[in-house]
Length: 589
Image 1 (tube, rainbow, N blue to C red):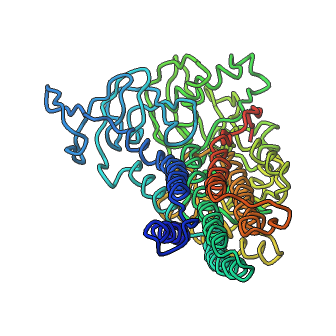
Image 2 (cartoon, rainbow, N blue to C red; image 1 turned 180 degrees about the vertical axis):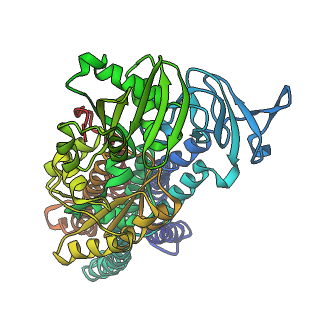
């Protein structure tokens, strides 16, 4: 791109130097125009480089997230060290308002963590003992002690930096188109310059021919065209990273704008991937047994308090979330496939499934039939030998999932769900979320074939998943989107990674892809269209009516075209990638 500028400056210098030493006519002295040309070119180049430099701010800001110092716990002492000196297994102290220096697991304390710089989510997330924390996140309200699990290039932050760097340097179809157009424009400008010089010489005005040739070479410089796509892609990649969307493959990012079907894996993507108490139903004789909904849940949580079973943890967690006072329990026993038993406030409380009802000769509550049709897990609570009520447990739907499905429908995108769960479970979730169609009972090795089936219908498919069994489907899809909280295998198979587990982030990918395409088309159109008009003017096509474009104005127009492209690309920074704030009602499925 600089070759045309170099040619123009060289021609102007040789002509001016020849006129000065008397070899060429004195009216070919262009020293003033040459100086002005150089100044304008340098000014335009400075504006261009300044715009490009801003696109590296994502990597710079990510690097700045790490603290300059870390407080390593050594026995009873706290030693100040550099984060680079930390090793796996070290315990570091994170003070309120401090940044985590390396990936690790909380071993003491509890704090609300600001993870917005990683996930794009503005809300803080509570991290307790046993939870993982990411380097660069901030403990907002209290201190923590964290055992380091990864340092340096092994941290999630370093992985994000690598993804951004690779995405910004990777190729794309639009970039190849721009490079090809810029190459053709060079030869067009060169031919136009030669043609201009010949025409003006033939009509007896060689001096004016030199001026026109220089102007053509300057004004046709494909700076704007060459800058059109790289700047848009760099800004889009940075903007995506700030919104919690990490682009691994720019080709898939480009393809996202044409996607008309989004296939969601259910477990861990649309749902939380863990059992949750979704309903509590006391028995009809609840007054006799002394239990209503909250009381029933409280005694069930007391009986399950010493159990490590996932269903038991779900019951205890539900009681805690409702703020219930859980009484103490003693004499805890557990019977496989039956349930648990404990003494709670002098009464024998048992919690279990169908086998427990058989032991106590009890009957299921009438509501259990409806719960079974929905594919829910049902546990009954038995107090002193009498059925006191039942608990409904299911894999809880994420509160954001309904908003994600609704927003995709508004954009004309079909939503499909795939799951290995039974038909009843899949149908219940699909109905709850308003999903267009679903595949139930799908084995892990068959998920990719379902993607292929959708593609055979002529649909452009984006697959969203988080597990190892999603990897083949992610690779098969036109666009593979991995939930960042998922497995490394799933992330490795996807072209786009969502740093958060919010399914609404898929909308950010769609909007960013479409906005990037619009800006690319606008910049390409301007970069090419500008030359269609400007080159004939520079050559002197309007000379018969007395209009000749000055060389300095040509340089200004060339620089202005670059600035227009740069400013248009910068508008991408204003794109709002925050998940839609419409608050869906809490799911009961």
